[in-house]
Image (cartoon, rainbow, N blue to C red; front, top):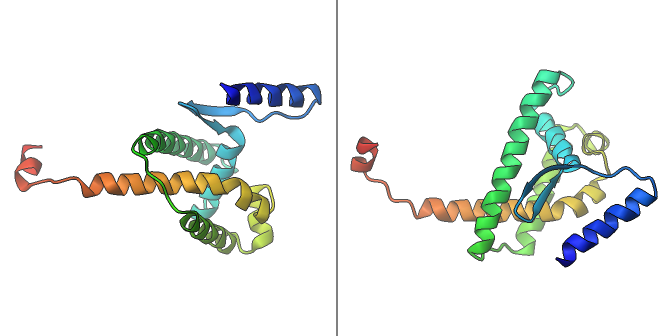
Length: 159
């Protein structure tokens, strides 16, 4: 309840100062996916796959794929949290640095990567850390579930 009150206060503060307010793309339980986060992930996905997002059809296809993936990740995250899944901070730091290095490489330099992100690398690092943690938690949870699967030839044939 306190979080909702703080969000409402933040909304009123931004509204009263005539600042642009970020929109909500989706809500999964207590997790909100912001339009700015969706846009950033679309840009990253397009850069990694060398896709032209200036084409409206390509943009819409990437947008649908990315938002569905983000929603799925939040649903799995909720399940992982219920099962007390955690990751170490060092794992998050390493994965985030690898993501940043890949983005810089695929963008042909730090300046181009910052254009794709719409912010500095340091700002991205601070903001994306929690997203990376959540991603690692969901990946770890999925791996745990897959390791528990036992399928026999008989199961496959019956399917």
